[in-house]
Length: 241
Image 1 (spheres, rainbow, N blue to C red):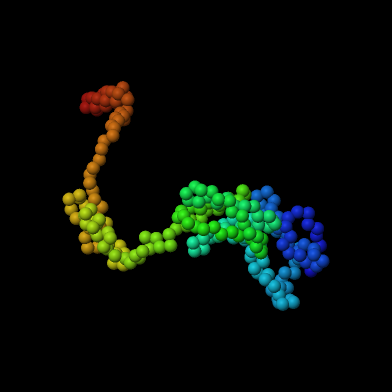
Image 2: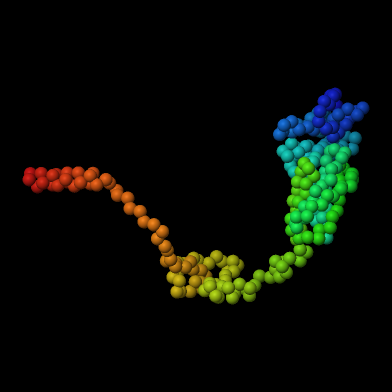
C-alpha cells in the first residue's frame, strides 16, 4: 500500500505506482528528514513477490539521518591506487565541477572528473610526490597521505635488543621484555645501577634551582604583640592565684 503524496521539495530516491514518490529525503537547516510513503515494507521481510532489501534500506536510512559519512550524498575523497591517486566524487547533481589538487610541494593542479554510474565521477593523477595531497571542489575538501611503498620503519619488524642496547648501556639503563612481566620501580641514586633483574630504577638526581623566595608573615606584628602581652598577663594572674 502506497500513500499518495506530491513532492514539494527534497529528492525522490524511490518511486512507486505510476511514478509517484515512495521515498523522499531532504535537509532542513542542520537537520535531515526522510519520508517512506508506505506502511507495508514488512511484506518484503515476508518474501512477498520475492521480497526485497528491507533491512538494508531501513539501516542505511537510519544511518543517513545520523549523518554517517559513508552515506553522504555529497562526498569527495582520494584513494591511493599503486603509483596513482584516484579522485572520487559522489553527488546527486548531474554536474561535477573540477577539483583543485594541491601537491605536497605546494603546486596546484586542476583535474576534470569523468562522470560514471551511481552519481560518481572519477579521475586519476600520478602520485609522484610523497606527502599530503589536498583536494577542493569549491564545496568540499579532502586530505590524503601518500607514503613510500617500502618505508624504513617496516624494513625490519623483528623484536631485538641490538638497536637499543648501545643507548641503554651508555645511559646506564637496561632493556626488559613485557613477556617476562612488568618490572618493579625503585628510587635509585645517580651513581648506582639504573636497572637489574626484574626491576628498573627512577634516578633521584636531587638537582634543583631556587628561582625565588617569598616570605609572608602568618599574623600581623601588632596582633602577635597583643597575643604575647595577653599571654604574659594571664600567666602572671595564674601564678598569683
